[in-house]
Length: 284
Image (cartoon, rainbow, N blue to C red; front, side, top):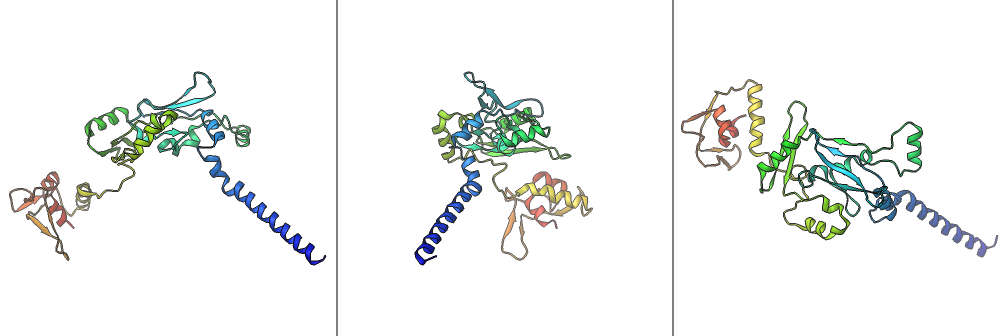
């Protein structure tokens, strides 16, 4: 083989190698991103054609449900009857903005396999169920409503947990938002406005933020000294107006900048009731 032919063969081999590598990258590595892109029309048709199971609270309140389209019962629309009340728990299932919350975490469980191809066929052949599965929360609907009422218009969060099991009975974050807006394709401007709101209603103050433990840690400190036998409810501690922190020039004061009570000492029970910073800062 003469030199020009050998060089042409090398060029052709290089071109085919690059082409094969590019196709492999598009199919294997970048393929899932193209498949899951909300702008993918096939994905949109697949998602609207797959029913999602309902999400209900522990006491039976329906917080997410799929309803068939009036014109085409093969298509479904996701709706949230108590949208703002469960926005930071349930999240939303949206063609434009993707999935959030439990709608995202349990997407594979909630969505039916009606439009699956090979994977769906294999599931049926192995005895699997392609029907949409529901999700029951540990949240108590009445307690959730009571938490929202207690928080009112103030920014913040409330979480109620069952101590024996760790089950979350209520989880509220304010301000909240209407998740149905993110499902409506004609409300894209409203959804964008919610995302740009300086009060950050999309952020769950109960799940997504980090806060210093503050006085909540006094419960841990009190439980530690009581369970360890280092002190009892009537154990007396010094009652200074401020506490010097060893090794620093900083001091700890109580919220009212006064001693924790009128005496020179204060009991652990009284310090706990009054949430005394100087007393709990001295407990080691």
